Structures are given as structure tokens and as C-alpha cells.
Length: 123
Image 1: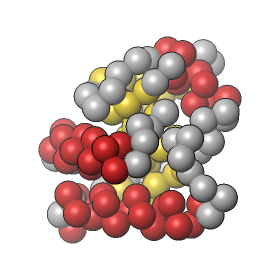
Image 2: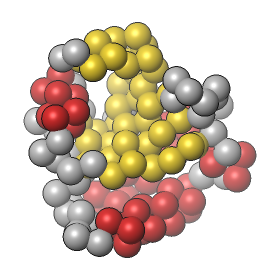
Image 3: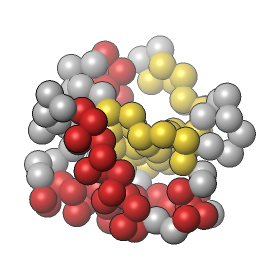
Image 4: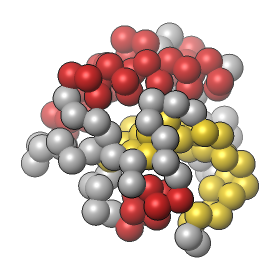
């Protein structure tokens, strides 16, 4: 099920990148505190001062590709600035664009990942 969602999110991420500017980071992370729930973590230099507007745009784009049952597995969409230390660490460790890297029980520069799919990570 989650593999199917990841493939759909790759399409979403690529479409948004073509409409806006590429993402610095776009990934799906399994939540430790909610069984079966995933967060979408996104970082982009094109985010405006109005994060709510950017978030609403991204959520609408995601809804175009995902089914209602897919959306039930997603807990939240988190927008993070490219200069954030977590994004810098992830980008330093992984390089991919519009693809899929699955990571299970990895530590990246001190940040522990349980289960994640990285779709785009630009250094």
C-alpha cells in the first residue's frame, strides 16, 4: 500500500517542481507515535512568508493524485526551511531527484530514521 502511495507522491512532487521550482527535499517518514501513519516532509526555497498558502497549495496537489484511503495513512504535511539543520543533514547524506530511496533504521548525522522514503534530496 505505502509503495503505491510513494509512486503517486513522486508524480505529485515532479508536477509541482515543474510548476514552481524544484524542492530541496521531499520525503515520507513513518511516525513513531502513530501506528501506520506517515508524515510528508517538504523543503523548498520558493516557500513564501505565507506558509499556510503554500501548504494549502501542496495539499491540493497531493489530493489530485491520492485516493481517500491513501490520505488516511498520512498524518500531516510539514514545511521546513532549506536552512533547517535536519534538511541540511538529510541533503548531505542523500542525493536524488524525482525518484525513490527507501531507508529503514538508519542514522543520518545523528538523526535516527525508522522508515522513510526520500523522493527528492538536493545538496
